[in-house]
Figure 1 (cartoon, rainbow, N blue to C red):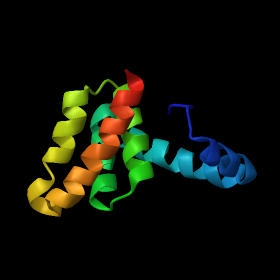
Figure 2 (figure 1 turned 135 degrees about the vertical axis):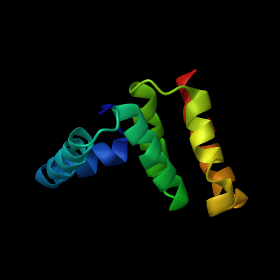
Figure 3 (figure 1 turned 135 degrees about the horizontal axis):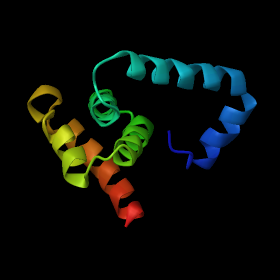
Figure 4 (figure 1 turned 180 degrees about the vertical axis):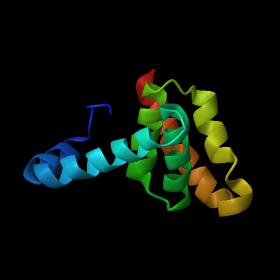
Length: 106
């Protein structure tokens, strides 16, 4: 997992170190148990984050998907695929969050 966390996350993560380590280990364990590769796993989690309108999770899973080899086009397509399921306003919000991240990476 990428270690360029937002400052607030780093502080809370440090305060509750054991809880955060357990949570991170759970995610890693589940990813390793299945047949899906890391990139696909993060794209699925990105879609779920967009569906629940979680800006922080959208940023996190977009970053992780990029680290795992996803292209900006794959990131955006993952979100666009949700349009008929979660609606354009929610899709548009998620795309704007991803756009912020992709601009930051340039």
